[in-house]
Image (cartoon, rainbow over all chains, first blue to last red; front, side, top):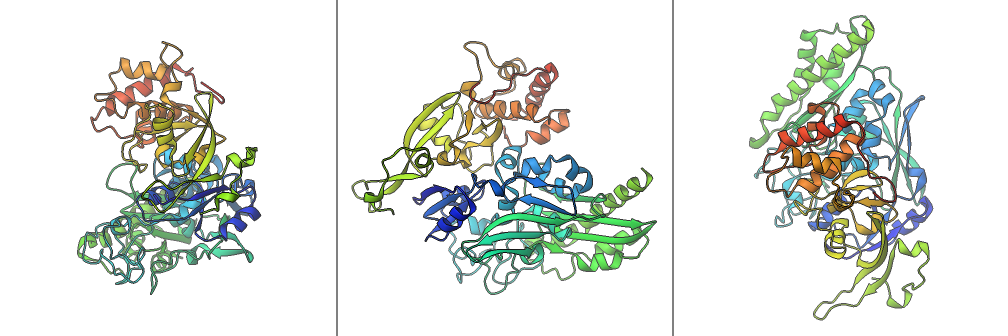
Length: 334
Length: 197
């Protein structure tokens, strides 16, 4: 690990001042950063620890806008009774991620900034990684690419975005609040993770020195009939091979609102717009769900190692829609 | 690298939480590295020590305090052998920087027994033969105590899910689940509290 200076920020202003210094990186839960520093992928010369910045803590799941301070832990948010009842997809996306230990450490803000699990990105013995060494190529294109993206990739990078929480937030049109040297701004979640064009090394809309301060979710009546389905290589404690966050609002038997976002399949959280459009106004049943799920992977560009993900993605969406439908119907019956 | 002439020597509270002085470069190396003066509470005792900022909580416990109960397994947060409690929450000590753990009450497996009297969870692991090689056991026990305290030990299925951050390559899982269920059923587990054990 490269040596670094450590500073514990006393306030947001202090953090922003320190974060402007050369080689600075912000430290929250540390579960990504410390790991990547140890294996030499990230090499900050200065860590600015945010844990004592009180305004970054806490969350509120009532009201017209749900607000999650960036430093709220995954565990405390996942355990929130209101969230579990009114937005099960959000709570489940956190509960199905990582382990109990990591959820105690990791923060809901840091979760959106976690780095890809691409084996070539994490292994510095491979020089060809456009994320780690911009312009060096992408070893995953012809390598072991079972875990890689079939949506949103390019010949420059096919690394998946690993966050489950980001996928659920995308389904609910969340926004990310950031503070920086030039003041505060809000970024919609669907433009927070940047699609891989020419520069796969640029992952998020955060500018140098900026701090993610909070996550905002507009209240949604589709929240109660929502779910997060995660397909993994083992039953627990693994990253998604494929996942879907789905929320439905029914009027009688018709779909008034369908929200569908995909994870594990794409380079950024992926909104299945064609599936949503197809369901809107339709009678909800197994046939319409199957038809909608069939469109979820439109535009997929698989590699030999991950071609199975195209069908897996459709089935994940179908499963999630069926579960959300049952939740919606139970909600009406109750 | 900070100029040595700027290094603070005043040990006020704020200085405990940051880099205080660069260490001189050892022969043959070009770079010095930053050192922090740490104050950490472990098993109810306060320790002060000057450490390279890169030192993890796990390495500090094992190499500097001689508390070798928490184990180094994967060293990347995947196996749970390093699990300790920080302010009552289970965490992976291998992914925690010692400088960042200041201000928290750390409890390790060494802090559980009262003299010769084992903590109920330690006793349950013995009673249920919940280990073979024993390498993952300290982490399993710390995690199990937290699992019950969190209210996530209501059924065997829930225990398996909420103990999934602790791997056991001997495959002692069935007996680990029985040990956790046993203690959860006793209803009055002693939970290591703030400031001590």
